[in-house]
Image 1 (cartoon, helix red, strand yellow):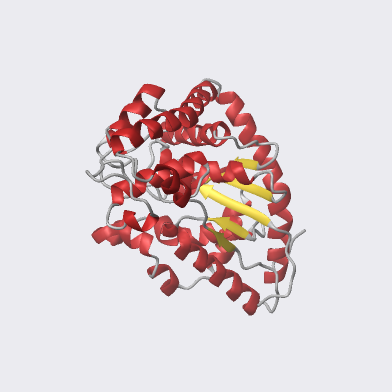
Image 2 (cartoon, rainbow, N blue to C red):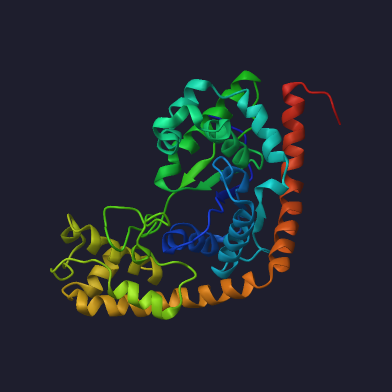
Length: 339
């Protein structure tokens, strides 16, 4: 274990793949906005280089990058308090990734479950970028000496790989240069499930638009989707254990908790015994009060693409001020000649 003291710093990245939904808001964007006043420097990145590991239509990628930025800001993230930028404008990410490509082992990459899931049975035709992108993810984090990384459960394996790469670099070069970043997983609704099937994660790829609340949905659409969300015939239980085996009921309770900044236990204490015919209208009103203003602000921002681009440009300049000296020191440790 390293005895080196690293300045606390948070990094997280989200792919600009379009169609932001309630799961993105409660699982990431809201958490980031809530944390920005804690006095820890935070960087939030639109990871557009990760996005192109699979084919992206260029204009769609540009639109999705701006839409994700708008989603961050509309959710309450202040680009003056936090650093908001897109990955491709900070070349230190890819430069550091090459160093880590030479540190990481092929066997480590082959164990990554997300590569197996995305490549499927046609792995031989997958891009080299898709296979090696965990090294770029490690570079995203370590080029800033980030100490904490908000992640979902599905990204914990990649963060473990980041720690492995940092440890191997430190061991190989007999240094304590890179920190061991810690995962941050918190909140009642970090994993929001489908409104049509509580066993499946809310996803933009679900063919039914009724399965999700899009961050661009208007008030009437949000209310309708909540009221039509799948439930079961039993009322809400009097204790949290009563939600076992009731995935749709648990999902709606978690959504209420996330939107109201309550624990699931507190929701059950307040709502236990109520029928869904009574609970869902309350949840719908809450969802509209939280999400409709975000949708409106995103719409306003998307009418001003130059404003969004300027925010990203300023953020990339600030990000490079941190990343550039860390990359230079990395090159020096490795033995590269330069300034």
